[in-house]
Length: 488
Figure (tube, rainbow, N blue to C red):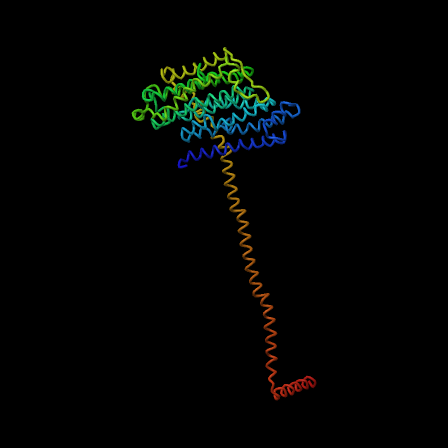
């Protein structure tokens, strides 16, 4: 909370997820009004029994609105912007919530509700294309990032998009299988990054280099996890990535996209590996202070590296149904793509090509990455600035909202409060005038009448002296006055 960038990242994550939750709530309400229940068994039973009973548009709307929640939670385009900023948190937290728990919730929700997407192919294709676009976009951004944790963050966004694409294409087994294997190698990568940061007290990979000589356990486990996420045979990531690519066989644009992303993933992961652990140290002082992390940090890396190798073997296609034998049939059957040797060979060759290109660029240096960046400076800036999504949202959402808030605040202060305060002051003036009128006019008239009567009474009372000669004088005076009036 003492770090402004961290608190800003927390607010960004909160607001972005609430946007997704708004659509999710609409989806829940539509589901209840359509099926009369929110129980999975009731919904799936109704869809499976008579899907034609429900409007295709209604089912598509339900699927898309529910998917909005997953878009926010699993950082899919266009609500992907919060997850890279969330790297401000501690690395063990990143390893936990950005590899296996929180960001996996959206993928799990789509997988759990896959019967709805089977019933609505339109909604399924929306999921697949959003996942594919997210995967490609995040992979392109990861190509040029310099912060070790940001590279892994965009890798996470890209891999989550991979899972969504598989689920949108109807492959429950491929999506959930990659979700499982990803948890192991991504947790290993994040903890490995934490070990590196602990050693050199820096996150810029261009300040590192040669760390494999001082950090044997960290570098070895990091390389294993990188090979796994790149989909190299026979590690865990190979089997799950291959199943995702196989599930896209009937959709050529998505198949090409998946293969391109596989190439980019291998390239940016081994760009990270080579810049961090190999070559000459680029920051001598940081290198001198570098050291292997204690066993409490390296043993989890070793365990996760072991799982990054072998956990995916449960999905070897020569096992009965592969990973799908562990999947629950939700009423529409578990789609399981058959192993395709040609696609597996192509994806592996593509991944090895990505690794080789990174090797030639950052180890052999036969390809000058600086010259390429300068030659394609516009593309480099575009990718380094994350497709300018933060700037776009700042221009079309944040600034208008802040301007509106400032305008409304001033309107409230000078117009609404001005009217209220004027009415208050006007009421005080009226009250003061009323008090004067009541005190000097109303009370004056009432009191004046009383004083007049009292004065007249006092005058008459002066004539009632009780002395006979006074009364005789008044009578004589009265007679004289009458005579004068009569005579003159």
